[in-house]
Image 1 (spheres, rainbow, N blue to C red):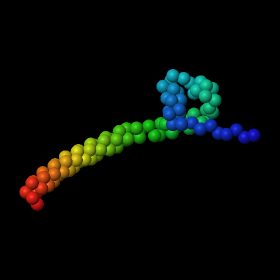
Image 2 (image 1 turned 90 degrees about the vertical axis):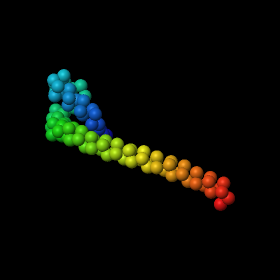
Image 3 (image 1 turned 60 degrees about the vertical axis):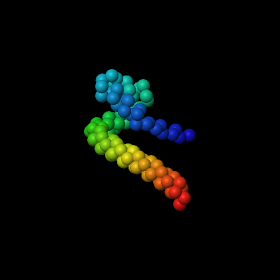
Length: 102
């Protein structure tokens, strides 16, 4: 019977790599504790270090996205107010026309 491969999510990988990088635990300790190979941990550590700069890139992207969201929210607010004003004006015009017998 074949054993199925274990799957590890990004949060777990980050946690164990940070334990090693921070010196909280040694590579050997993490490998023993989670039954991981040193090669796999080395790969995860390498991936982590290669992609670490993206954390700061995403902050700039998130900032631009947040600004765009704020701009769109302002536009929606303005259009909502204009729609309410148009509804009230239409209601008043309808009411005046009805009183004048039109």
